[in-house]
Length: 148
Image 1 (cartoon, rainbow, N blue to C red):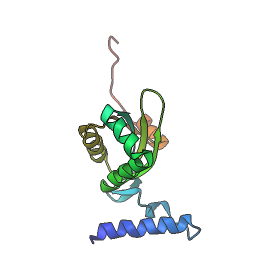
Image 2 (tube, rainbow, N blue to C red):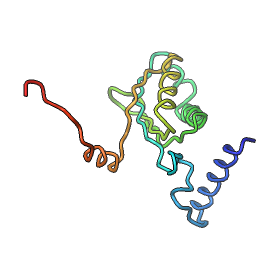
Image 3 (tube, helix red, strand yellow):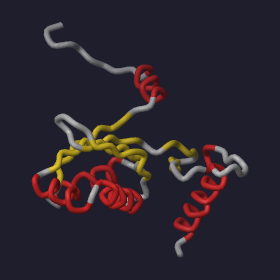
């Protein structure tokens, strides 16, 4: 077993242990963090807005929502991500999925593969933390409004 896979498994077991009343782990020990240079940062979060096609609706009726959730969770884990939530909804979109992924490339891969399979159409929203917005506000940007 590769060392990285083993380390992630050990960290996940520690998080489960802590959730069941064991010793608390620091945030930097959690598996939903990634190494960025010399520091550990939370993994980016993404919202997938999903519209079922006719084939996707037939599959949902045949398999059920819980089975589809398991498929989505395995897919996200195969990309070294973490499924945060999945909700079916009324309205324009049929399903909302929030995940943590290591990077934009992983999120793009998930959207591309699921849409290409034909059962769904997805759109992906990058979710930003309050700290990321604060950092964006502090950045110096050179800009001139049209006509100014």
